[in-house]
Length: 96
Length: 489
Image 1 (cartoon, chains in turn green, red):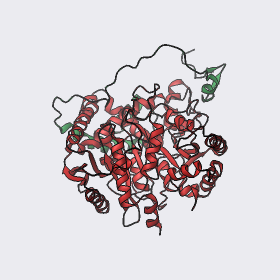
Image 2 (spheres, each protein chain N blue to C red):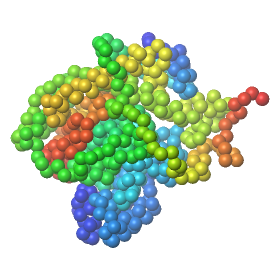
Image 3 (cartoon, rainbow over the protein chains, first blue to last red):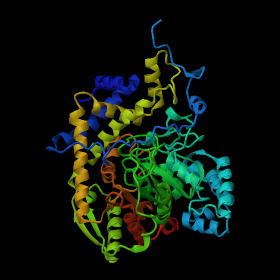
Image 4 (tube, one colour):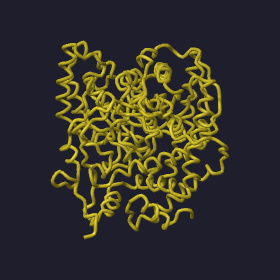
């Protein structure tokens, strides 16, 4: 199997996603089937075709650097799960 | 006849003549939602007071002649992945269950400024990932034609609301078929515009190089009227383009004489249901009767559209959804004891199964060792598909075919087999990969009395041509209302 439970654990780690033990097997089976199907692309001769990230020719869009923003600090902060003194609260990130 | 059974255009004419009032109209829609939403489940948030206030305001602007837009005073519904200032925007996810946007998406904002009345927010597959509006924390949306069937997805709420006359029109979003497939399942008109035509500012991002907002309406004229208001260059979206081709309504009645239609063999293969095939071919015959020419063609790359689409869209999604970290907004796990757990547990609890599956798939495709073999390969296939379409448009004015291999399926029928669900996106996903416009118009009913939609695909910015052909189809096979009377008689 291309994607087993160990692979799922590794990708879940890369995705910062906790997966319940009971779901690991199911995801491994699903992804094995899906990726197995997608590997049909590797048999395709794409020669020197250039990868196409985007359909539009992307270019930088420049504008004058003038402040335009409405101050919505309170509305923005209201969506945060936890705040204190107008700051977002998170668990301690440095060891005491 | 009930007011809410009228098309947007018919409603506008009555409003303008002063024969009906916006508040009366809005109340009729709200009453109908209270009565019918429990069985259809298209609305997930209702904005009753705001809608009535907007209705009063719109009436004043209509009466004084200050606003002449066809949308002024028309009740609308918005897919719940477009930010609406002060109105909860959930993406049908536990992650955003309590998210109140501090701004409105440009598309919604433009409609509100023209006096459209927002009745509420519409159900969808979580983060627009799905084809049945079953992956949602609010429970599935049901097809108004028969509630044992799905409404399609991911804009299932947007399609069902129009089909059940619970909105004058709605907005949906389409990343791989999410406007066109539910439009086909519910017998309404749905347009996925050319990439860049409608601003994505304020649309919760799924796959940024594929996402596009578009209207779902009762008929083709209504679709053109909504496009007239929703299309505009937006400095807030760096991929927004300028439309300089005039009103979307002006070519509707020009007919199809002399137009050439290409029928790709890949759209009519053995996967296509017989009933759908018959209805599509019959409709093409009706266009030929009006002196359009139809000819078979080939788009061999389309066979690989589904794997390329799922690799690219999931890769982009895995990056876009990295922003949900449980800190500034969105769900935060109560069990998290350190910062790493805030990220991992909040995301694990906040995202549903299909969203997790796509994040895992995308992360896998982008991870070291697989990036070239999967993601880059998919991008090359994307160019092959886009080039094939471009070549086809040297020979044909439009590509025509089905939107989906079958009509609506039953609730739960495909839920346990994700790959089977993905494979059916074969006729829609290539259009997004190439950034093209795609219009779905109802063209008949199958033997179970469920609607069938026909899809028109054009070169970039050919929306007016698609609408013109769609209009001719509607005139030939009968519009939504006629279809509905036939189906329910």
